[in-house]
Amino acid sequence: MRGLESLPGPPVRPPVGHLQDWALAPLPLVEEGARRARLAGRDLFHLRLGLPAVVGFSPAWNRRLLGDLGTFRSAGSFSRVVPHLAGGVILTDAPGHAPRRRAVNPGFGKAHLEELRVRIRAALPPIPAGDFDALAWADGVVLRLLNVAYFSGEFDSRLLHAFLAPLRQPFPLAVLPRPRLFRRVNAELRCLAERRLRGGGDDLLAHLAPLPGGLEETRVSLAAAHDTTTHALAWSIWHVAANPAWHAPEHHPAVLKETLRLYPPGWMGSRRLAHDVTWNGVRLPRGTLALYSPYLSGRDPELWAAPQELRPERWQTPPPAWAYLPFGAGERVCLGMHLARFLILEVLAALPPLGAVSGDPRPQPGITLGPVGPLVVRRGA
Ligand code: HEM
Image 1 (cartoon, rainbow, N blue to C red):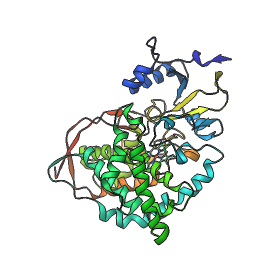
Image 2 (cartoon, rainbow, N blue to C red):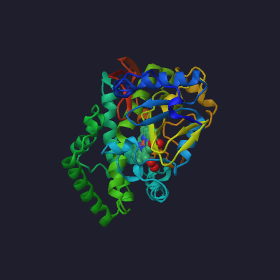
Image 3 (cartoon, rainbow, N blue to C red):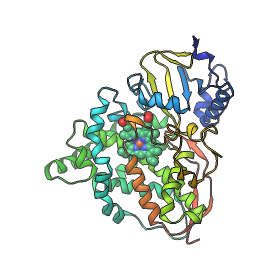
Image 4 (cartoon, protein in one colour):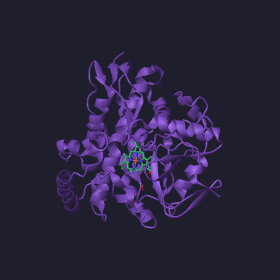
């Protein structure tokens, strides 16, 4: 049985291994790792990140990692080190995870979102006149719509902005503990939750407040919601603006699917191995950091024709199973998948015809993958 070191990997820089490239330019690093793995007939490559780490991208690997919650654990994953994300369902492992998800799911289900539709539409801000940066605009729109969906618009919008802003800062600022900020957010959440516990309501907080740990679920899911949805919306606006043939709402679901295939905001998911795993003749020891990548799987030339091209028409036929994972899959599939799609499609449907003016849509990884930006579009072009 071979060890994990026998796996291919991108070039190493002694003595730091892959740490420097991981911090400064992770996309070329993992693309090179995947290229070398494919050449070696493998679906897994090795990274030296200060602890044993492997990245896989085949449907078989995705299925195993996302399906076997007992072995592939969230405790010890990357989310553990991001204070905004370290809690709630995100860090709960089996067997506690399934009941917790069952409790929080209904608020985020399609039926409840349908009840919010009229309020979400009414809260859509006006589309700016002339040229505007779709990335900056999407940022504010998503903040406002999340405030409406979660809190009927009652959360102090400046505090909400301040709470979410660190997630966009570069490492290590993004992962610094912020006890004072969290205390203020928790106090605001408690105050709004008490009103719902006394007087009902039907926003997301009204669903979450009565649950054990419901305020933590609210805070953590908000943190998971904002940048992911903003980036997916901004890229979608950009692509619709650049392709006037896709302006009509019937094209938007396929444009969004393609946007998320090429630019998945959750570009890399992580787990830790609870015990040794044998994968295609290689022994992966307990404690290994095991990664899957919606970005690499979504661009794999063995899974997609012309993977680098944005082709909404490819969605006329279903993709290979376990190849398309912008929202993850299995029991831990994104809690906000329907909410994100719902908000993005509502905003796209409200846009007048746009033209793309200038911008840099290349993906840039941080806690989430976002466009380098700006993405300047023009109304009425
Ligand atoms: C386009 C927008 C979004 C994208 C691309 C996205 C992506 C993802 C991905 C890939 C995962 C799985 C992570 C893993 O396997 O480690 C995930 C999980 C999660 N997402 Fe999202 N997400 C989006 C929006 C949202 C929204 C709006 C919410 C608000 C509720 C949210 C809340 C969560 C939570 C709580 C989890 C953890 C679920 C669990 O472990 O049971 N996300 N998301």
